[in-house]
Length: 280
Image (cartoon, rainbow, N blue to C red):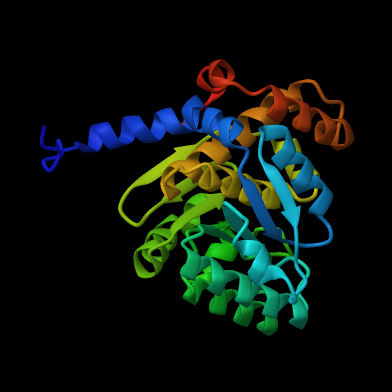
């Protein structure tokens, strides 16, 4: 039997595959493979993102020493670079990790926290973008800043709605070859030509520090499980949004939301994602 000829896939087939990955298939792959996700992230969120990765079924590592990041990348299924609490040694570690990941074919996620707020931070973010992340995940202000626009949110918070950055995100994706995810009241994911939107989540999630960073880490988990970039971003954002929504219904405020969110990430399955996921 010859396998040279492959059946043509329509856009409808592609969309169905992406939706299936986001609504259960991808989650099952994460839990079957327990991918090791190498995070170079900020002090504020290390515990939060490590627990979220464990809850969803991945294996987290927080390794940022410049002396060992290159060696550690070779053990990882995915790398997540988060510039929240920058220093020059950490910036150098990020560059080395990314160079190693690119050379080894390890997918990596860039979270450009507060890009556009200071010149140093903006320069580091621009350098990392030029190294072609597999996925870039940020709020609207961060994505606008990466593209040279008028970003610069209020510290780590966005001053723009996610839809305001969608056209810019499409151009950024086309220019870099990265999939770009903009998170906000509605999340948008684009590879430059296709766009998916996820309308899950709850306003209370903005009162818990580090949930944007958690989104980036979860994208790393789905990439590490072998999902394509667009599917990985859609799956991670759907999972976090659904878990947050269900958790918020059980929570009195941000403190209990943080605990309930971990429980809901742990309890997620195909049935819950299909029931609550608002993906288009």
